[in-house]
Amino acid sequence: MFKKNVFYFFFTITIFFIDRLSKYWAIKNLNNEDQFQIILSPYLSLDLIWNEGIAFGLLSFGERNLYNILTGLIILVTIIVIYLVIKAKGIEKYSFMMICGGSIGNIFDRLFYQAVPDFIDIHYENFHWFIFNVADIFITLGVFLLIFREFGLKIKN
Image 1 (cartoon, rainbow, N blue to C red):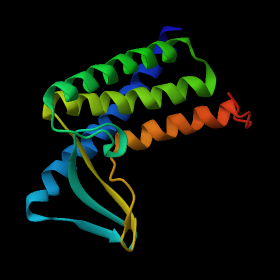
Image 2: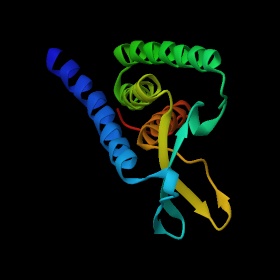
Image 3: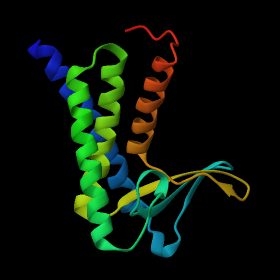
């Protein structure tokens, strides 16, 4: 049991560190003041923005008290997800660990920078999807796995 819990802990922390390393690289190499952007393909570029809202820049606002309340709510939800990691089994456990690892990465940024660095920009011509980061990818994957599992798609535990 102890070995499994250590593995689960390291799985979650690995997601956190992958996110931290990617954001560290983005902050050091993508200088938004100079409008620096790395174009990887006609559909994908890297461009640093600072997100003060929640996922994909939703609920962005300048009021510091509202930002702090939102951050507190995100921390509370993450604590609930940690509880769900402990109670879950199989694919649900991995889904919640991905959500947890990504959430902790974004909480770190909210507390340390007072904003979350987003830098992955998927676009087609003038249509741009929300700019996001690696933590958002893990959170989204975890949520999609939970949705697929809930709809009864056969995902082996």
